[in-house]
Image 1 (cartoon, rainbow, N blue to C red):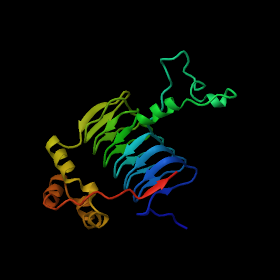
Image 2: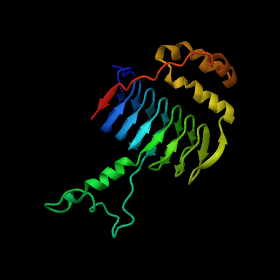
Image 3: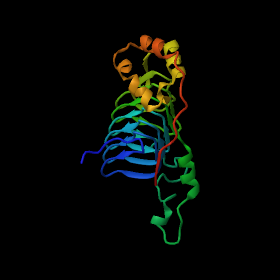
Length: 220
């Protein structure tokens, strides 16, 4: 039977590891991916073997295969880097893991905006914000916040160019088409496909934006 996207929650492919994660409508998690302590909002997806931790991901995010979002750090200011410091129960009888370490790690959230594109094998460090409409090139390592509608590339990632002029980007963010209900997206599909950006904005700016939808599913 063919698996299909659903308004009721995520389409999760084989061999995924999902823990303390929530998903919106029409979301999809590619084969072998891991999602930990994260929320992935409506229409967003990741391709195969993505690794996502401690992240808040907006709507319509496009996350390519083998990307890594929110990779954890080792304690570089201690005598040892090794995880016996905080995964201690695995090494020493009668010892417990260090809850403060894990609470701190979980608090270092990555925030990814709406309609973003995270390229193949890109890495986004903890506590980074990726603005709406931004593009992260394949293989980039992002160590600083990325402005809305900016394209970045390299190691460490640096700006290449803006997708649109700032005034156009501001109009898109004000329009917030990603908050439109499903039926309105369907009605505007031909415009998304065929209109240049200025014509699209001129046609749709006069419309009244609907309220954002609610989160649809929880997976533990």
